Amino acid sequence: MTSATLPVVSAGKPSVFRPGRILLYVVLTVGALLMITPFVWMLLSAFKSNLEIAKFGWLPGELRWRNFVEAMQTAPFLRYFRNSAIIAIGETAFTLAVCTTAGYALAKLPLRGSKALLNYFIVLLLVPFQIILVPLFLIVKSIPLFGGNNILGQGGIGWLNSWWGLIIPLGAAPLFTFLARQFYVTVPNELAQAARVDGLGEFGIFWRIMTPLIKPALITICVFQIEAAWNGFLWPLMITTSDSMRPLQLGLAIFAQNPEQIQWPYLMAGTALATLPMIVLFVFAQKRFVEGMANVGIKG
Image 1 (cartoon, rainbow, N blue to C red):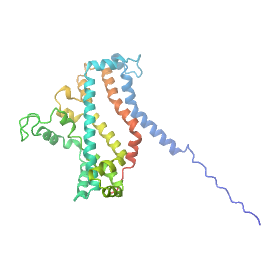
Image 2 (tube, rainbow, N blue to C red; image 1 turned 30 degrees about the vertical axis):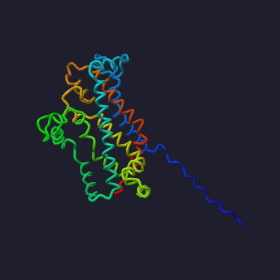
Image 3 (cartoon, one colour; image 1 turned 90 degrees about the vertical axis):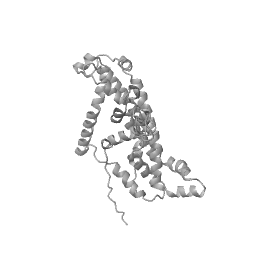
């Protein structure tokens, strides 16, 4: 009896130097360089003098670290930083409280018309913020019993130029409600049913059982909301009148209003400091953030 020799097929590794892969790497590298170049120029300009910026050279003659200190003294950037931090924290806390409860109700409670309400939230995702800007301003101005208004919302300024007006109107976004709902849908209903059998109330199920299981969604919502609040410009521009209430992005724009007297190194230093918190936030939250975006379900 002769033994047949079977041909051995070696599974060779795909060539790393395929033309398509090389072209992809080239395109991605060029795109990354185009995106990072303005940030590199901004950071380098923060260490230059006015004369060096006027000559448009890339590298500074010396690293002028004092530009950051002098920028804080030239304009109230520390106050702007504080205001932006208050707005970002307040909006994020309000968003988590409202959008997670609404998302849980849409996903797990037997609400009549929940499908229509969900479709309404999806339609709201298509509405640009600029369309509702004027109606939102009029509503904030007419809040009863605030800012000198009477019970009918007349006679005063309502929530204009106040923390209420800066935080509450932009705190409950349809996107975050939809995102929270999609994550709650993926949690098995059996967990809630078992908790009800044990006598746990509906709020306890939401707070102690369901919400801890969607941490990637919560971190994703936090990253999106903090970034939106930190970079907010148009809404604070409309409702703030005093310098003590202005956030960082609006403060930077006001600092750059007069091109003839502007100190470009100070402006670049302030802008670099304004960018730093968002970079640090994403670096620490990127794992959960990417996980949350990748696991957004499409279950109805």
